[in-house]
Length: 316
Image (cartoon, rainbow, N blue to C red):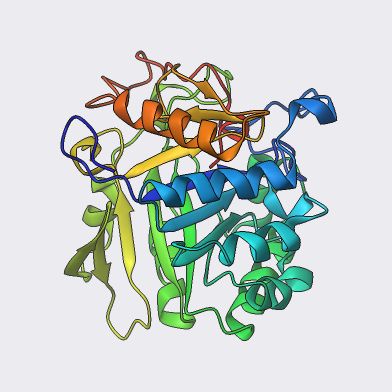
């Protein structure tokens, strides 16, 4: 389906849970989230129905997100059923990686073709600070398990935070020289005023380019500008939603775990699909696409996101 700004919407990000086994400071509060009643969360059947409805209007790529999707008890069934939906060519998942040693091969068998793993530091102490959990070893083992499971693409997502991990840019990027992964640096988004990061934390991804002086530009892959280090197996990407937004090329919509379509990550516009049949979901998705804004507006430390949700409540 084409929106009113001539963008072809082909990509759905479906959050299956707001819950997570980590407490990353830019994503959710230290004490976690208030668990919603079971009846307030999309059922598995409703999630699959939503994917079928999205496919009916032209969506062919699905990304499963959370929270942490692998804490969802029926995650394998959700992935397997969604992968079989007519029109869906690719099912991907974004995870913190801590449970991948158990789930990597079953996810591959369930039809998931790509995995993104969130990793913001290679320093155990800093990882404990940012995630509020001792999780670095589990995440690194999870990345290796995903590679061993035969995923055709494993990507590492690193949120660039000034004063926290901007001194690790080269070390993190060099993972692309050590294993068959892509590393993507993503600008910190001002989702909510947690008080954990001051203005200096919001730095442009241009700092990545300035740091990786021996990296060679290769090509662009969707929203990411790609570079390659000498003798690297994978690429380094930079994603700049703040300093250089890509709204004109945005091809996605989001559905939250509690059944709200968000036409834009940073908009407070939400359209409920909870309890709808497939035809009603199709109508709701069409409405959401028709209401997709041209761009998300100015975003900065002083201009906060209008999403009115924490990141874990939307889907990373």
